[in-house]
Image (tube, rainbow, N blue to C red):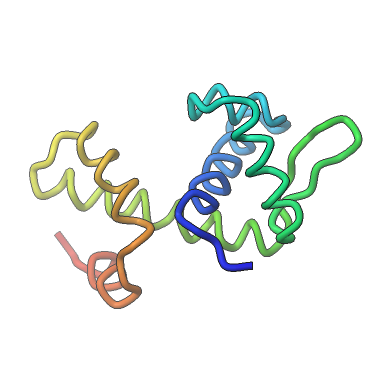
Length: 119
């Protein structure tokens, strides 16, 4: 299954919420993203079928090893790009918003150049 930007965003959100709360359900994702329950339910189903997440009998979400790999990659991209933008003078809120868009489309070459830049 090839992930679209929205799938990557869901995985990153699940990753962040798991780090913050330990245990999460779909409703936590709804509240964090401001999305409807049906939208999140559909995405959770797709991610589960794609092998990126597991949902236990109590509705708790966990990342599979493949899901964790993708989530780590997107989260790293977000934090490094956001930090870079702040260092060059962009306000934090705008840097976070822009990083959220850039993280999904930036090439590995460009990302690694930003990551290795010493400023």
